[in-house]
Image (cartoon, rainbow, N blue to C red; front, side, top):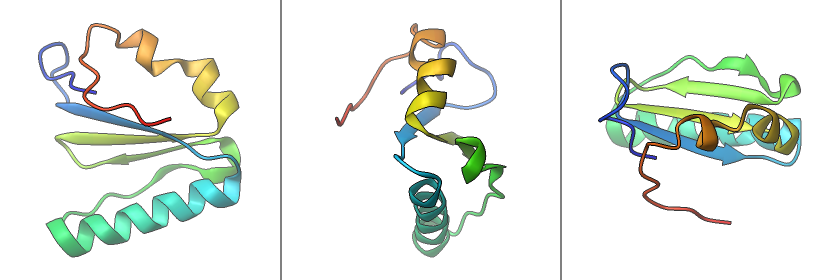
Length: 90
């Protein structure tokens, strides 16, 4: 989601769902490893997989990884509805 015109702290949100805490942890670890390898950027994960929400902040891009319940509760797509959705995979 492109939010650079409406937010001063980042340009993009990437919003991901994982169906279990194990999947969220794997997604977080895998993404952090790949971003470090290919782009030489690091981010300390905020949140825990068992809480249903992990955030990786890379400055220009903030990645939110949610359980389905937490994603439905926080509804970031609605909260930031003025942003432009670049790609939606279901």
